[in-house]
Image (cartoon, rainbow, N blue to C red; front, side):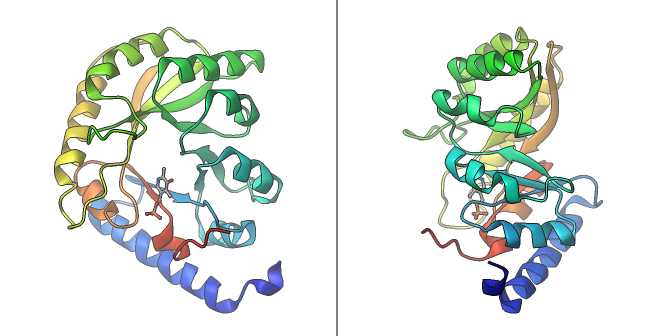
Length: 237
Ligand SMILES: *Cc1c(COP(=O)(O)O)cnc(C)c1O
């Protein structure tokens, strides 16, 4: 495997990593204000581990199967692993205890299953609630008017801890168009921060990807999820 890792690929990951961290620093004003999570779908563990050697501390996968097949090869001594994709209830059991946070909780049913599996293993699982801020059909995430109910339900589940919110805004053709969605998310984040709910703390606002992470941070994101800007264009096999 290492043979295939050309110096060219690694050099570009290094350059990209430096560019991203500099951009984040500029947008946020201080290095510890924003958490960089690398979206690692389709990326082979050797490349991921190289990025970890550069200082990357958080990675996220979005398919259970892929996560499990790469699991033994990640350098998890130096990095934490999260789940960021759409999660089917019947696959929850396979990742509980393996991931430090599940960013994509968008229904009571899914929350209940994560809670049940965490309870079985004697764990408390950190989650983010995913919001469908653009109100798109066929997109994951709860609608804003469903958020309070989900929060209240989850608040009563001692093996879950809500750490914040996550969103994937609509694909916008022109840059800058996502600002209004980012701003709405920030407002929700602030509103919920002002409430006192058991097992709920608004630590993370996870929004911003390769094409819009700078804008997201300027609107209040404190976690960005970046894939192609770091690793290059994805090659699906
Ligand atoms: C792939 C992915 C990303 C990163 O996408 P890029 O545009 O490649 O940066 C972020 N979040 C989720 C949930 C993803 O699946």
